Image (cartoon, rainbow, N blue to C red):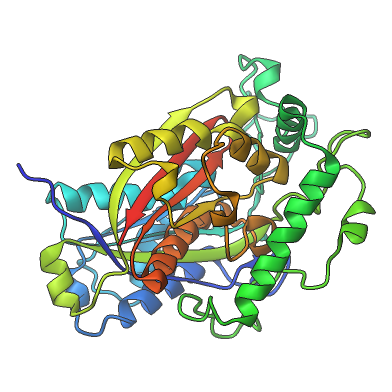
Length: 394
């Protein structure tokens, strides 16, 4: 059996909304349907009935994104009912996992045309409550927020594994001696690059605003922030810590989708591909050091692709925390940091968990298309200790 080449024909995403912001009134299944509908509509020569599957990442699934949000998106987007849909969950890596699983299906010949992406509405994540152990309890019950992080944790888990995500970032800052000033400078650069990219129109080709929401660009980008403003923020996880709301990614709402095809599917779209998928890798690490998960994943993916850091044109690394991103960069001395997140990262743009990986893959694909040729990487850290990476080429 021969392995088929897999092409990314197009990639779209919503503007990313802040927690409780412009997209907070939009259901996650509607966000997902919007990017699926927009993506398919941008390839008018493709018969939607030819789509073999829709694979979406979603990190929550406890609220309006329940019961397979990918299938719900297919139906709400108006695609033929014959088009199936499946939802995958690798927490923060869910959107990229969806792209990788879709690419694998195309490469193996199980599919010719697949939509892949992800969605998250952290604003609309519900509270949940466990059922009582016995009937008719007389006491109070606890509600758990499903917005982010550990909840209803198994007591068998070692305590050092189940620290808050921000405490994990503090541990990485300790491990690599990353100062508050370095983290704030990294965050400031993220905002400046994002603001510059928006001002230059670099996101116009991929962002599809949601009809009815007054949001045309990413809501968390702060054009006028400064080191002085960032320095005024208090540490969020330790009284003497270095991780703040300003040097961490915010809570967000958004969705993204990509169109993946083989050679036959490419002919049906009548379009030139943005990029080709070369390799991927996933790795595990101690849960409390989740932020360093991409270190090994990226190296493995590059090795599979027969490439090194010297071959890269662009690199999209999800900025869960500045400390986490800087910790990864410290482990890659051969990587030119100027290649990383040239259009800003998640600290500025936002991190809607299930959508972020798809946003990163789409951004790399569009950057390679704009450059005309090259090699790019998309990578994320993942809560509970994993790393995920994808290598694209053009």
